[in-house]
Length: 229
Image 1 (cartoon, rainbow, N blue to C red):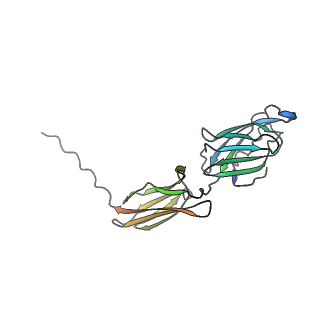
Image 2: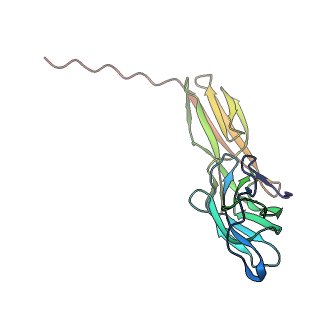
Image 3: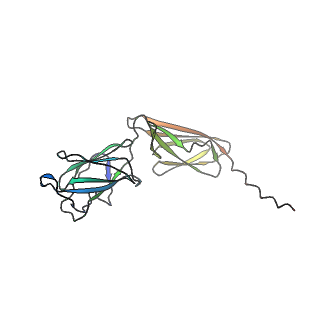
């Protein structure tokens, strides 16, 4: 199998696990099989609503939409014949994997595949917002932020990699491949400005920032009053 495009394939599960060529024969004596699998992001989270297509160039296009955690099933996929697999969704565009083939020498059973979608740039026109939208940072209590990406009124990424900058009375620590940024305040009364930048597909960038005040830790609650005599 030869890959092209931006898809990466789980190494623990081959693109087409050589689990067989079961299924009925297609028209003209062509052997076909059912192909099941799952589309996941780079964190292993299933991606619902993605259109998965197999195209041999000579047969009707075979298509399904992922659901219930990124799972899909393609019917009547030809065995021993190269086809092009595409995965498309608004937030990732179209990813292509060429020259895919179900090995006819496999054992009985349904062949399976996992497709891992690497992080991609959001489409042009996307906006970002840092969350939570805090106005205060409390001493001794680090707060972790992430970036949400929206496009056309729809939330595309509940968290996304970003370039983070921080100015003022706090320090920052990047976590989880820049998806999260932990801020630890250091100077009571100071102002902290947190900014995030996310590159978009057309080469532009979306930005957002928060300005917060560092406050001291809240006063402990007073002990309960003794019962009245």
